[in-house]
Image (tube, rainbow, N blue to C red):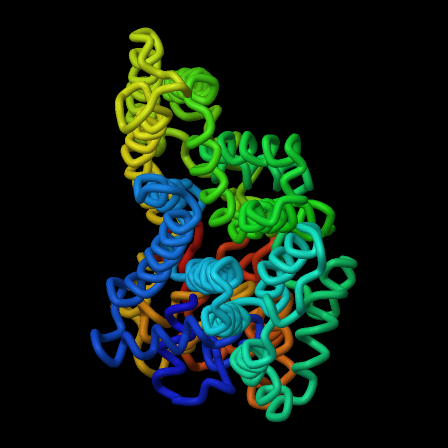
Length: 545
């Protein structure tokens, strides 16, 4: 979907008027789409080019996290560990492979946070100004509110560390100016060009969304607070354990009173703030926990540097439990894993609400679960071998195998071996859900004069035009991220009701209907003589003749 928005931006050249399927799209700011459009100019509008942009964003976030950790801790090995911890957090790795704004957002957050903290601890105002400017890019990537949390965490940590520092120590006015200009100028320009945009963005998409009273709701089904926290922690497992240990030690020592600990206290505030505030909000989606992951990776490196044997024991037990869970799930044909996915996956919830059977075939995950059992089992055995040999001791010196770095290295290698399982799992899900087969069939069969109709919100098949080259009209699709765009005058003929579909279906043109809704809830049940042409990815393609 996001690649299609960028392709339309590359054609229009107007970043103040983003569109999806020709309909105004105002849910996200333009940074991802500008980067993608530029990449399309250089490398062509293809899948590989589109995926390269968020992947590079993910690598920037990893590099920024590793750079900051190396500055805060002696030796470069802990910096490398922090970068590896972020890269191998399964939630982060997964979203780094999606064509979505999240990895660009995290790149700006982690880069801005690293530069801002480096400027504060070295008293280099220029770095702080640069950091605030990079945080402005985060506002341009996804959400201005999310971009404000890192500087607030730094300010709170400084305020608790003792005598109040001048505000300019962490908020130099040139940096604030750059943040505001970079982060908010686009919003101001679109507000002038598009009446109603400010109300939609500030009130409907934030205040009313939290209150669950939106005027323009979409079909997203929020997670409960408990499920959100479980998903967020699992996405950062096992690094969340070491990060939690570091936070506990900071709390026990009342580290917020020590100015030297300010970077770590700020990291803890950032991670806890993201997870805590999201859990308290009535609306939560799985990726809302991602902004906490760079801070968790930093804290995980700190946690491992302070503890060898206790964390090694804990991780050995966790890896053994995960290996057993994967093995049991594999023995059951993947059924238990599929139940977990159904309980936590927003796409499954949306499809179920639309009356479509969206549960994935458990057998698809058997290979992934088998590899996962082997990898986690090997990781557990590696840690047990180190413990049994008596080579883990927090009193060891240097880089010998009796240092915490040994267990941290085994943990990192285990997770490096796990992320291919995540990639395989994503491939399985994408193959089962992609609109691509339907779109390619449509491209092959539909004539230029034919009418293409998509039933339901267009974002549910956002790549339909990308793969088919055909722009659909939208049936019953106003409960959508395009709900605001549907009110714009130019979209009047792009949104149909069932009466208009029925008239076209019985008229002289050939009409194709793409639907992902259950047959009892789909308009196709009321149409005369629908012919089923193809079924794939949880969707069906019908034609009237």
